[in-house]
Structure formats: C-alpha cells, structure tokens
Image 1 (cartoon, helix red, strand yellow):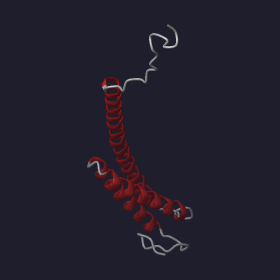
Image 2: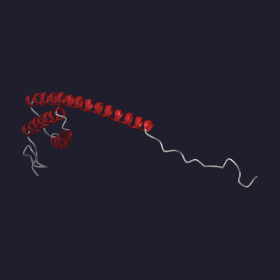
Image 3: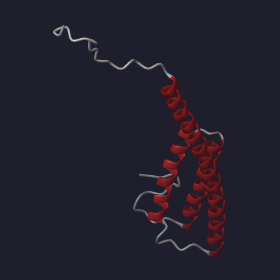
Image 4: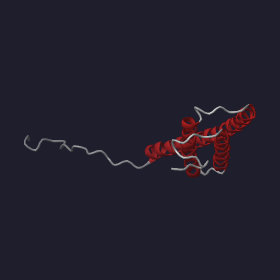
Length: 136
C-alpha cells in the first residue's frame, strides 16, 4: 500500500520522504486550523483523524532514518508551526466548549423555571365525610 508520500509499507524511507511527510502534516494542521476558525467541527474531526494516521505513519517510518542537519532544521521549523497551529485550534475548541457550557446552563435554568411556574395538577385528595352516616 502506498501512502501520501509515495512510500510503501515495509519499504525503507528516505530523509526526503520524511520531510515531505512533515510538510503534509503541516498542511493538514493548517486545514484543521481553518476548520476550527470556521467552526466546521465535522471537518475538524475528519482532519484530526487523518492527522493522527499520518503521525502514526511517521512514527513507524522515521525510526531508522538519519536526517541531515538541514533537514533537522527544516523539521524543527515545521514542528514549531504545527505547535502554533495546534495552540490556536485548542483556543477555538476552548471557546466553543465555553459557549456550549453557557448554552447548557441557560437551557437548564429555563427548564427549572418552567418546572417552577407551570400549572400543577392538583394532588389527589381523599374525601372524608364530615359526619359519619352510621352515627345519628
């Protein structure tokens, strides 16, 4: 099976392909950020799923690869940009969580008010005669 970098599973991967994989991760990270900014949560989840799969691919294939110094420097820059993007995605998610929390709180208060002020059914009352009909 071939991946986005053109590498086959089980095949040795070149340093160039490793850098291409990091470039693709950055691109995916930026798409995640665009989705978060647009509040397109479904697209964000889809991108995150693919991102995780690509990170797992890198973890498997980068182990035995020695990167030259310039590639190490490039990788560090790419990782720094990904971390920056991730921080902003997290800020968008935190804002959304807070918004949902406020909506949930408002909904719960409205429900409680509705319960407090809705007409109540009368409780069944056991009617007892004032006078015992068997006694004169």
